[in-house]
Length: 471
Image (tube, rainbow, N blue to C red):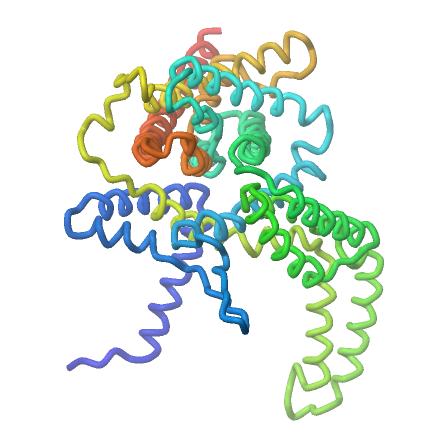
């Protein structure tokens, strides 16, 4: 047997880690991973020897029975299965990260002023209203009617990933425009879920949650910036939201807006401490000289420098940076694995023109909403904003190119699937069937919107280059 030298093995591990880091830093990486997990989920849900295991795992009960001394007990959290754990707990972290991103853009990003925000916000509003109207027009009066929120969402990761692949073919201003639009769209999708897809509200529990939120807001205003003062109340808010009837994921968004954005230490304080630490490091050069640098006292000072530097970055920034890789490459793939596994009994699931007076047509409403409603709504709202001089056209952008980029707004994927999991509860006998058909339609519509947007951008870019050469 040939032995592999330790240094060769270590070098291979380091190379794998380096390649892994390079891959995760690519803007298209999350989309590739999500698509892979969607395919895995579809395979597991449809192979004869895996589909029962797949569904039984998702339905496994995770509730803990809490028993009192008298022998009476209750289960906590109520009705918690593996699938609900993913959708109601892991997705809280996703929504928390989305909330941090929205807060950053509102505070000092592309939504930080009325002038910057007005155009993408109006465009996002058009991209929500028109797909919803198309869906309602197709499904009004049927069991599928409550799914109107499904085609209103845009998956920011996929849209930006395709823009990255297109590179210089899209003006930078339109890349910024679509990013800001997707963030505004996320906020609107959050509001749609909170207002229209919750259960019956327990106002007592909701009032307690609001009291805790107001207390946290006061702590924020008073300058409290220690993480534990926010983490423990966040768990309490999640529990109260879960039992109050509001969707539990909304607690993540609320907490994201309460997390302090400003750093604990100012720039002046940092520079002062940096000079003090530098002097102390030099003073301790002669101590424990045989140990080399850093010696014991210097290691203590370096730890203080690290702590001070960390607290010069706002908690909101730190959390967003720390959580993003976990959300993008662990939580979202797990979500896709749990929710994209649709058992397809027949090819009729792919027939988008199938319509029933009783069930309506989830497929037609979602696919037309994503592929047509999104670009038409975004472009029409942008056109009205420019013509009324409420907003201004992105620099170096043309209407054909804006429409092509707007097609990428039809990539609903993550958020659309999430809304689908909350829809159709009014008709229990059809709920599973409608949700499964909805998920297939989301995948088909998102894929079609991505292809249409990609090729339209290339086509419009070529025509514009040809026109410029002829001038």
